[in-house]
Length: 355
Ligand SMILES: [Zn+2]
Image 1: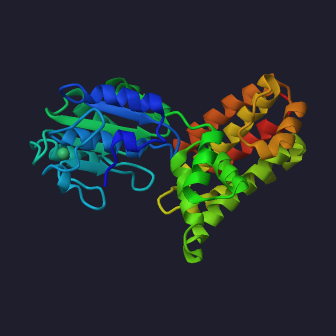
Image 2: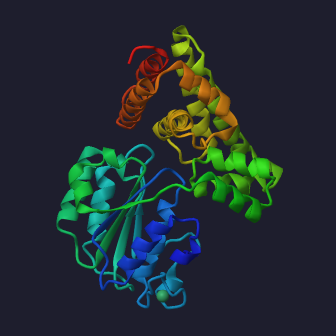
Image 3: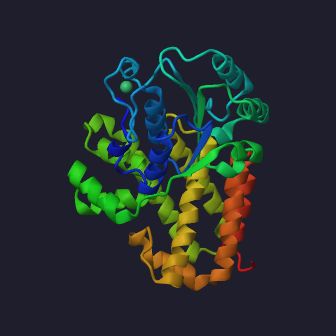
C-alpha cells in the first residue's frame, strides 16, 4: 500500500513540510522535480504525493486509504490514473514520452487528477527531453508531473525551470544507525557500518538490513554489494600513499568494482553503478576535508587514519580542486563518455602533486 507522508518518517522533515503545504492547495503544481541520491526516498515521497492528489478526500498528510479511488491501488502500487516512466535501462526514449503524452490527452478515469511519475529523468535522451518540454510548456489540465533524478545538472535547463524543485537531504549516520538497530535488531557495529556505507540514504540502508535478516539463500546479492562497497573504500584508502604509477591500476580496479556493484542490483545500469562509485569517492574527499578543516566526524569513521593520510599528502586546495574533477567525471560518465578514459585521467589527477 502507498504510504502517507507521516508514515515516511525517515524522509527529510523539511521536504515533508514543503509537500504538506502543497497538499493544502486546491490544485497540484504542474511539475515537481525530486532531487537526491539513490535510496534517499524520492520515489516513496513522489508516490505518497501523487496518491494524496488522486484521493478526493485528501488531507495534508496524504490519501484517505478507504475511498473508491484509493482502493484501486494495486498490490504493486499501480493505479488507473498514474503512469510510471522508467529508463530502459540507460535512457528514456521519445516513444515512451509520446505514449504518455497521448495518455495525458484523456481525462482522469476515476480520480480528480492524473499523475505521471518519471523516474531518473536525467536519462531522457535529447529527443525525449524536448518532447517532454513541449508537454510541460502546455501542461494538460488536471495533470501533474513528478520527476525524480540523482543528477539534476544533466537535465535540460528549460525542463528544470518548469519544475518546482524538491531537494531531499540525506540522514546523518547516528539516527540512521539507531533506526537500523531498533528496527532490525542489528548489532551496533553492523548497524553503523551499514549506515555509513549507505551515505545517509535510508532506502539503501533498509534494503541491506532487510536482506541481512532474510533467509541465507536470499542474502547473496546484498552481501556482495556490501562487500564491494567495503572493497571500494579500501581502494580509496590507498590514495594517501599510492605512487602516481599506480593510477591506471587503481582506475581499472575501480571500474571492476563498479561492474560488481552493477551486478549486485537488478535494475542498476553500468553508468549508474559508475556514478555511484564516484559518489563514494566524492564523499571520501569531502570526508578528508571535514576531518582536517572542521575537526568534525567523518562519514566513514572506520577510515579515519587513511583519510588523515590523504590529508597529509595533499594540501586542501589541491583536494578541493580534485573535487571539481570528480564532479565533472561523474557528469561525463552519465553523459555517455568512455568510462576507461574518464577514470584513468581522474585517478592520474588524484595521484598527481600538481593541481
Ligand atoms: Zn481516498
